[in-house]
Image (cartoon, rainbow, N blue to C red):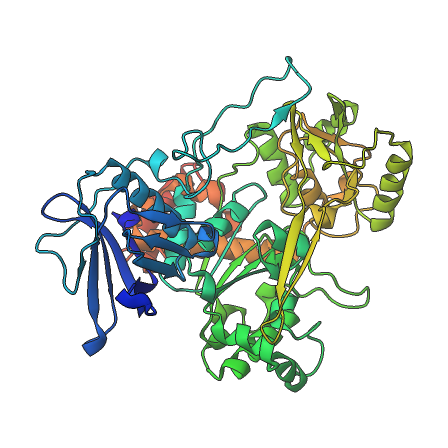
Length: 594
């Protein structure tokens, strides 16, 4: 039912006779429904406005006359031409994923509808006598991506050209066609919290699908009031956003608050602050706590609202056990969770625990230990054995991760000098993948909107030497073959970030592993213990039956046990001590180590 309903801004344009300008009716916060009338004909219904301006317009859709314009569906915009006379419905400010599902459902239902509908669409000032919301189709028919080419295109359309296979590689099996990835129960809970309008911080180890979930969240929010940012440019590119510093417009944030507010009051920057209702921040671990406090104060000042962060919903993602904020040698590291405004800005904290990037349980357990700064003899032995792994597969070299930029530049320059290939002055460069498919690299265009509405663009081939990249640049990536040098690790979490880029232990080669390189910040470990306590206490409050000894043993350290008992007694809603006595008996029986 959700795919048949869309909430957005709708503009209905109806041509007038005599060549006059079409009559246009704009409806903000409109509801667009796809249904059927009493004749079982598809009907597009647009309802919007309030008071005397309220209106409900319905269009009977004929399969031969309906035309969809979906080029900008990814930006939350589309148009539906509903008749041969040129009447059309313009949709904007739509959540992109919801718009794609709606357009795909509309296309399928209209194509399956009767062909003997009236030639002109029926535009009614009231709903049809009988209107029922149309039934949804299966998941395969409503997958995101409305408007793209498929094998079975419309008559007269040219199909998309298939990638050219130039090098047969029989020993490499073809990749299986996987169904669209579904959200896990944990990810669904995060998405539900976002839709409720509360500010949320969700975290998880590397490979738990944080970036994937962020993209789904972006697709569920109106693009005109949602701003996607990240602490670094590489992370921002992964989610199609910009850096947090570029959005804020206050430089490094080290200037006095009054000066930062003046910078944020500039026309182009102020417009972003006022329009923003949902602010997404990825890779929060690299955002300095003092900068976060400065942003919160600037938001209240620019928006002239006393609510935390000026009333903006914050959707924050990252893992504080990964790379910390970059600071000078004489400065103390301050994470965002140590900021003064963190607790009043964040309403919900959630942790994702299901690892999706790595399927090898042994490798997952190794990464789990490394993440917490633990490196046993067995973990050390397995990681040192990876030095014998081959870093080249079918002529394709593994990506090398280095701790410092100078190592990256030296490696890339050496590889470039050794590189020899046939050069042609025509055509586009091509990349061959492990599966044997060759894909041309096309020109990319970057568009930046200036302060006065001027659009600046740059077009070039997105190529950069990447035989080696820094560990900081790799954060958020997933690599099939990776070679790592850890001899010069200088940050907590740096070794964990590098190792967790690999999809499997077989695709990992560690050149110079040293157990001393594995470390985690004590303040971050304390923060995560505190987060898990309250997350479990919240679950027990919702369902007291979760207070089982096995859950205590799995999630809690021994020193947390009696704290847990007191929380159960208050959060569980029972004050007779029943749950507390049951857990105590289980502990005395040896099921929980005290």
